[in-house]
Length: 441
Image (spheres, rainbow, N blue to C red):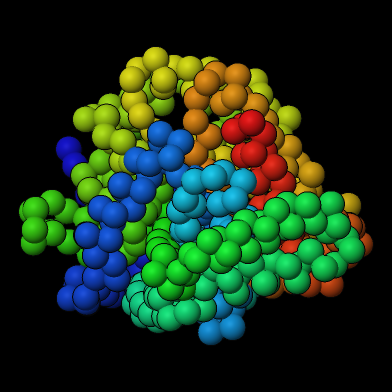
């Protein structure tokens, strides 16, 4: 059987009035959001990452919201990723692949189908692509028309991202100046040495007559990714490439299957096994290494570098024990995957004030453990996958800003999981750059 006939976990209960079929037909008539050739370029870049010749930075919102898809928010998210990438490029001494959790991350898996507040029970919020966050019967009713709004919002977002990344906004010299502004805050003085070294490298290049314009330093490649969760959205946007006759998901350059939907006999893994995009699969701390090998056999049977990325989400206290057995098994199989650390999802807890949060120190510790495991095994740490925002929210505690439990209520804006704010994201980049530098030493 193929994925339309297989069980698909984490799907909403759509109304049985024919509206979903009409929406799917409409989506199938729309232009692709990304193109097969762009996906092929990304696969090539990820193949470099699998060999240690590039490093992946994947970041963005936990769950995008329609009302937050403003020019300012999109700009600030892209700016944050560009700033992080500049620092990581120096630390890794290799190109950094810039990929946003953007223009499609409008659906979220949920641990329960319902949510109860007091005596009222309603369907769980599954992301703006499905229903609304407001806790009312009408808002929480799954609405297929939202799939169309997700498409149009993603299209507008990608249009602006392309303008930012090709129109001069991403100029390396400007990005470096932004980072110098970050270091000017005394809270981040410990990173001044790295910033000064980057500044010296930039000045050296200029003194040698480097032509930043000829080097394409004013533009960057930027790729879009999201979890391929709602198959009623992905299927109509799956198109046949006229060059090769191969199917591609044109909803994003890179799509991944989450921890809750990676059943070997389920629809999601079967779907990504049939498209030619580079794809990812998330792995939690209890994953069976033999199951991981079966995932490889299904999704990447030809063992093509850049095709498959494993995104590990194991928790700061678990990663050093849980990750080695998986990496060893995969390495022994001969598969050349990209190993990426998601240090967010394994470190979530409820604060004493009742907010879902993450401790910045735990996030850093999981990345550190990720690097240590790969160092000990002689394998390649290929990237990081981070939930972040370009705004000054207070959703994760800790960091040099010293956000406390009591501070969370000030600007807790996420509709789902807590994100690193702009300052915490940049601080993480400097810390990861140090780890990358130690790996190369």
